[in-house]
Length: 396
Image (cartoon, rainbow, N blue to C red; front, side, top):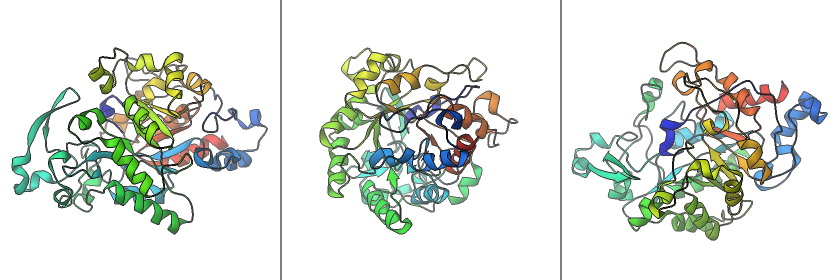
């Protein structure tokens, strides 16, 4: 997920269950077994099979549990160790990965093009001279950038934990895995699908596409070329594409037939492609009914920050849900908000326990509150927690 992680607020409030929809604008399924006339067991089965609809997004369970950068609550993000564990824990989809280019035009999986915080590049004296300061989407950023390295050079690096203060146990795995390429992920997806006997889904994101296009490293064409090569550029292909820049999704819409999702940060922010183009609209404009109708013209879903679903008050507690879920569903868009994490600092204040930065709060209560709004799925660093929470919600 995007640079907007610092703005990610995981929210909740006591809300009555609204409808849980099958994906891609299917009919409202209803909030509870009594509404649906289903037993808890039947509702659980319906959830596991996406309501019985076949093919593509409609085959996914609802609410869908998406492994955010893999199982990044337990392993360094965007590594095959993290991706593999997400599948082992039962994630319905793995966000593999955030796509950034190398100097020689390959796509690799990193949270950001700056890799000082997610790799051991600082420990490589041969790359000391590559450290530099760049303006990335208007923000001065110092470090090492993927576009200044060849793929061969990046393959000499190893991944490390990005937020060790919150996840000290993950540092045990520092240095174990290399940086994966998107092509390797596509091959891994096929291998895992064969081994597990069920379709593995991935959810890659184009990162800073306007920035990279200005460098002559356009992302969308590279993504489309690889998807076409592996036969994964179809409407029902198990690859959902996402971006914080609407024009990137519009470009992809012309290149591939995959399901597409527009990511949405805080309401008062502007997508960087809008800033570059002089478009004055903010995310608040995009989540109006008119804005959502426009998005529905070229995408199948939105990925809002959880604060857009349930805002927080000044103390960090969840308040009342907005109309976003209802409004998006009304124009046929699915919602996969981000990001649920188990640790206290990432939870709404009313779901925290204690003050330890790496201590777990009450994510089950938080998941339950978000699920009750009718969202179609959620990104989470802890897929196992999300799956248990979904089972509680469906059978509750």
